[in-house]
Image 1: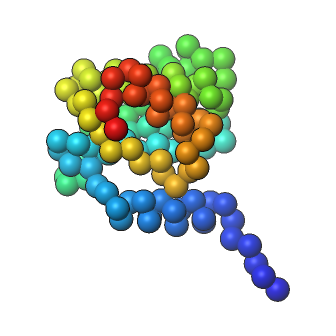
Image 2: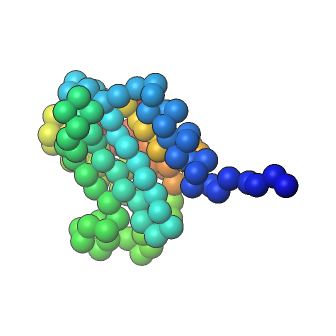
Length: 122
């Protein structure tokens, strides 16, 4: 009998393959995205030191107050603008996008497009 791997296991394997291709540097850190069933999280990470420089999620009070739902495309787009504004305030203009093994459509694409429109380059 053939056993099918769970989506989470498949996503983690994809994420490891993606992470082997690039890392975040101080000049060009990594924008890592994670989405759960209820919320979205975005971090800008310097992998040479292993520090999270900037983080934003739909759990934050300021972000959550602006949204009706925290798990839709509109919430992802708003989170993209928030993370981009925080990055530009810290002087980060260019990042490497890490989709976290998720398929580049829907919420992940909305977050990336909103971050690009707000001024991040990737």
